[in-house]
Image (cartoon, rainbow, N blue to C red; front, side):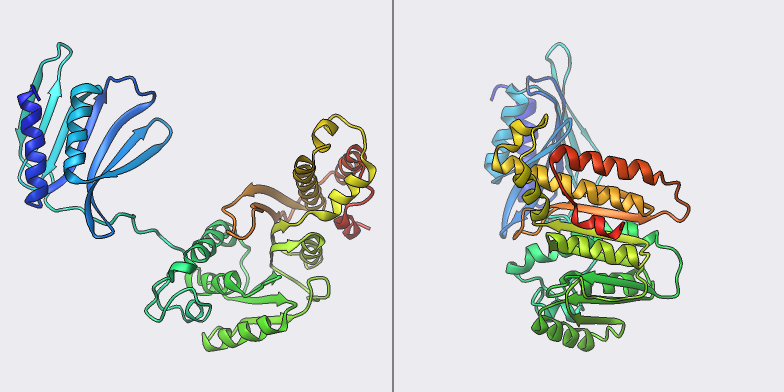
Length: 393
């Protein structure tokens, strides 16, 4: 290199890494050709027990991270400063700060200052996440084979653990807004093995400190028996699992109704139970939208989108949107404010739409307008009946 100031700061960077005094390094005042690149942040990290330099390329709307060995990383720093347009480089160590700058005339200057950092940062590659459901000291997570006895999440269960926390993260703000009640009655329709049911009970009772009774409804007896055993062993006195179908389940009132990945019209059965139980909150993640697709396939109505629906994959997606759109309208009809949004799905299903209904206690509803919209939508797509309409009749 022909730039002695750059050589000096690069040499100091390497020595600080060797002496374990390196804190971080930043590259700024970018004047290069890379679109939207703002700056680069460099930190030391530990990946699979190997020391690396982690580069975070900060663009206007995104970040990109790349990791390099020490020598490779320092060589790259020299290249981007010398040839790529960065005009300020700042090295932070425990002994001193060193800043290299270039003015508008291309003249470089190096300035040494007292250190601004008094301790080394963590070498953890991944920042510790703030989980709604912590893995440690959770007997039900051990029994469900999510964690081992020490509370460490099994490698094969990482996705399931993330999924559980993602669902609770979505539900958390909704649950906090529930009306005050001595005991919140929650029903989880189609609970399966109960991963979310257990986590929801734990979150409500032990994190939010809201007294809640949670019932998981599942038609497979072996899973019901297993989940009841785990609930008893975990000391979850107000958590029970009942054998039966969603349609057969009877309850006088519900505060929260949840149904995740209930297949086809089972989602509608769950919504009906929530409406009839006057639930404050209804949350469903629909799956297998077969009923409306069959209606659309049967009529093959000519409309402005038939150039799309002639293709199977587009017809399937259209049927999904129409199915859930009418569900949202029917929830509106019964006084629910609705939201439909995406979430991170389970690895075993591509379905990732969540339909949420929040009961409005003093709704101003134009029911005739809603019924007209439903009728117009059905006529446009050639639909005879949406299964959920039976709750209106």
